[in-house]
Image (cartoon, rainbow, N blue to C red):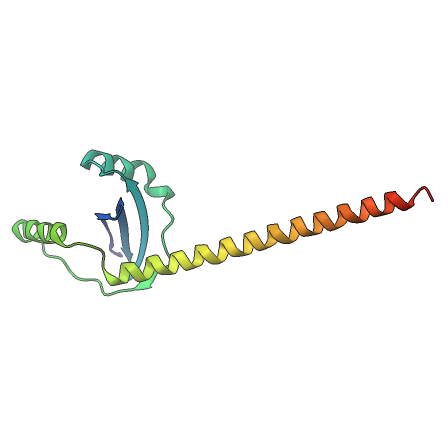
Length: 138
């Protein structure tokens, strides 16, 4: 049976509060970045995760090393405190987010190019129809 783990990091990135959802499955990391705006309360973050997790658009997977975590509660508490003090996100997460950003950028480019071409074709056909209507009477 495979282990799946998730992690949410919330931090302040000028001028908004940002949350980064990290999901590790089968040694593959995928990330999703969410902008909260004003500083979210704990219950707001929890509520957001419960209601919107299935709608999050995660980045393409990136290979990563999976570390085995201990079950000692004091150690877990120290790690949580350390993560809270740590500012920013890991480089693997940044790579995954960058990959997702580039992917969405290329999708937007193709859609806008198709729309531009369709509009150009529509205007051309409209001009042709007007031109034929002018010469129809003579």
